[in-house]
Length: 94
Image (cartoon, rainbow, N blue to C red; front, side):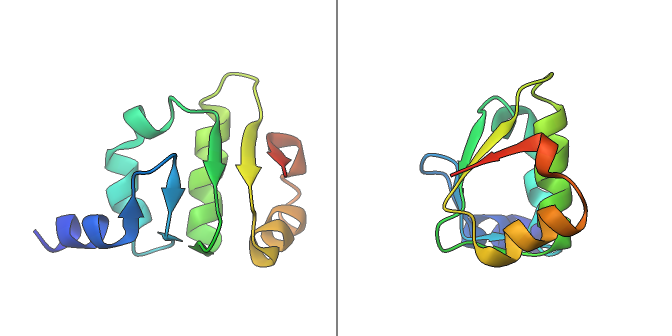
């Protein structure tokens, strides 16, 4: 029940926009991945993201079978993590 509350609190299901992609929220999102991974883009405007969120995006991108995941409005820390982990080939950033 607590996990469901966390999921509802941190997820805005409007055009694949999430308030937080973190160690706290990724487990609930992972359970919903079959629906989430159908899209090939995400808007990270005003999204808090950590390394667990980046790992989730990596899995999402790999699920797209050769397509790059389009990331809109990526915060600087997300771009820095993507570059640090040398993941730029998985994503298209705007």
